[in-house]
Image 1: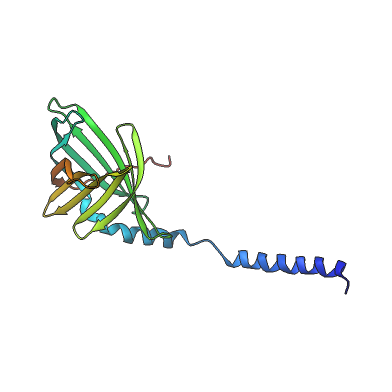
Image 2 (image 1 turned 120 degrees about the horizontal axis):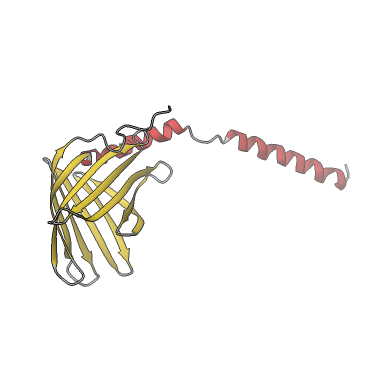
Length: 194
């Protein structure tokens, strides 16, 4: 055989092997992925429902500002994500704070994420389930804001601490909510086909 003949044959054989390899790598079954996500999100099931109670935050001025906080939490997309909406009501009844979040799980990375939208900002953060709640953090350079939640016995308590290396943590947020009941949110009544 001449070199002219060997190179094209080798290229054809290599292309055939690569094509067969690509065919063998079928994408994962979406039903299996959703089932894994649904199972993983059970760690956050204690959040589901409607919650209400007092909350406070420390404003940039140093003033402690109190509100009535509500949360509603439920599953969506066949239980593969958990949606969270928080509303903070001022003493006059108007909404002074509104936030929306999505808790998800990645079968590929085996990690949980929390996508948060609030006050004109958004971010994507790691969230870690604990035995009785969760922890998530926002990094700002050397400073970190750590939110820690405990949910048990009908009480949903979350605190936010500002952590700066070399200093004591500073509590800047706290809410203590009582479970009001179940909710059909966000599934509710979907738009019908006709």
